[in-house]
Length: 381
Image 1: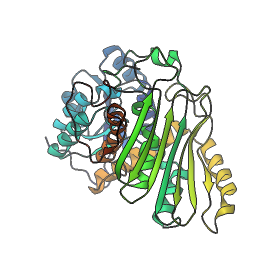
Image 2: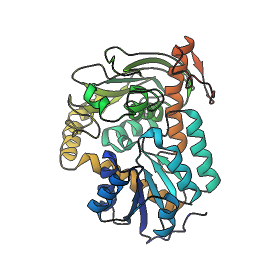
Image 3: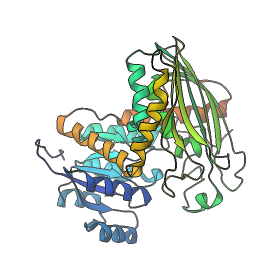
Image 4: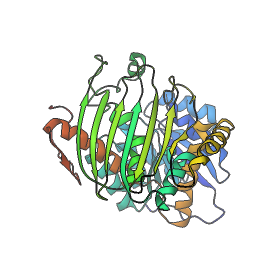
């Protein structure tokens, strides 16, 4: 089925598939956008869908195709836990709806490729949620790199030091398991920073990585991972991501240029922040900036960005910006800022770290699905 044709004054009918914690942020974002309407919901659990539909006064359906056809849905936002992305995406694509998927796109390359192929075959647009790209300090770093202010980006780093406790993993049965969650910090917490690093540094040539479970004996998956990255532009990088620091400290992405200048962003700060379970405590800031002639701007930007961040509901505002961009892509028949291929690149990166740990050697890019019983490097180490 072909997607609906839109005019410049169109009101977009949007459906939410999956009615958990993050779905409420999307519902509020949709309500705030003048050209969008939450028109229906679907969930794997009937009671959850009933409660959600009552709260937002929209119908709920037990069949995705029927929802899309009856409510003339233009866009679905898939908010199920990522182990359950594939089925609703395939059904929505076949029914002709454009699709925006919560991160990560999937836990495996095989599912990622199935999603991308289904959307291409159906002629619908696909995007993956990575709303931190709209943070003002993140955009400032990207703009500086694009403008050549640091020369060629030659060294990119991620330091994401967080904490998850037993209550977090006990909250849902799929968390902390290989066959359901598909991984730990790499799959569930790090995708935002991985996506930003790839956005800043470009395509990867090779990765060597190792993962460990350092202090979470009650889960199967990794709580910490490190990697050395070689980029196709000749640059290098390192990745450190962990859920083992109590309390959590920060998430940072820094890029250093061949002219010696450095730019960076602290995307996340605040010891108690857990996505979907507590509020963001600290605004994102540019914590490193040594572009010639702009060194003294850092304090001003921190003050301005913090004031803006504290004047909005950040959990909703940046979702609005990404949904707004996706609707513009539908309207103009262009690509959204975060595409399905971008989502796959993040999956490819954490898959490479798993394979590298398994094989104890660097992994060359690009990667293709292995279709092995070890979940593509996750089980046999």
